[in-house]
Length: 245
Ligand code: NDP
Image (cartoon, rainbow, N blue to C red):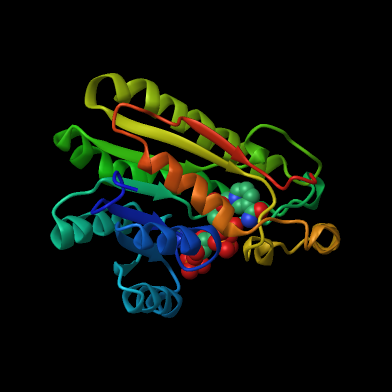
């Protein structure tokens, strides 16, 4: 994993699930990882585990819906390590429901976290990466970034948006500033993501598919593969899903 060694990697949503697994796997492979999320105790526990295993990790409390907190996250990373090689825009929420239920607050939450959070992450690191003339921004979409199903209209809209943003970033930045942009699209993965569901109908559906999901380490391995490619090679999109779905 020679192209991961010593890279400075910011991971949003690193307090559980895919973000936590990715932080651990990248640290095992020699990256310096900066973990961000809102639940500080969870972040501290993951950082301690990484350090005890011989890795290099720090954490910062940062809410992705705050452009200011995302700027502070980037500043903290620069003060700690002097550069930013990779941003993983991983934080996300999925309180899905049918549109007629009118869960407007939850629509806003998905738009704020899943779309604006990704944009604020890009805004926080892009000037530094352009100055460095190198960098890699990895954003988490979903199989719902390619297909819509009943109850997923708003969540899918946010993940279609992430796909558009990631592709636009690739077209604008890679030819001139050599900044790589990668879209990761997981299918059903065993994490805490369904905890944000409040619609009884979706909760019932979620309990039916429980157990089919894949390990968050399967997604972490795909992210690790994308980062490890030589600088002239860009993995622009990867979909990783359960074999049985
Ligand atoms: P988890 O719920 O386990 O992790 C989500 C992470 O996002 C948590 O660490 C949470 O931390 C963080 N987060 C949520 N809201 C905010 C916020 N406002 N600011 C900062 N961090 C926030 O779920 P996953 O690991 O599954 O989710 C990771 C990504 O993968 C998401 O973008 C999700 O949409 C995507 N995905 C997941 C799939 C799955 O089946 N699990 C399938 C397809 C895509 P905290 O609460 O501490 O802030």
